Length: 156
Image (cartoon, rainbow, N blue to C red; front, top):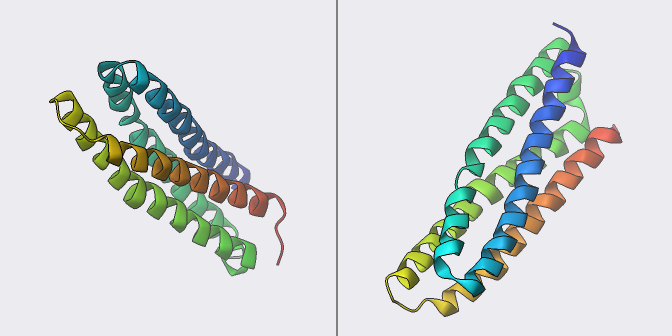
């Protein structure tokens, strides 16, 4: 195998993860617009966003496998460089932010929406969730920007 083959797969995986985050951000913006018009339409958008985590996970697996392939083919040269180590730390933060924090926010939003659809009142928690989800998405995008910058300007 050629290292450039793995590099192409690596870029595809990273672009898939970042692109999924951007699409998720846009969909949540549409969710809040639809929520103002009707809760049923907002719930439909929320159900669609649940499928994004599988696309994100697929991008991560491609990123992981291709990254391991490049490290093996370079005989560990990349793994010894500082930019690579920082990049790995940012990737761990992306996973924790999205998988742990983001998933918890999504679950709380789903519960609040189900409560509202059942006739309950969860308006206070929805406002808090709206700002938390925005912060989570912006954090993800900043972390991805850091990975892109580190991947372009490899310093040692």
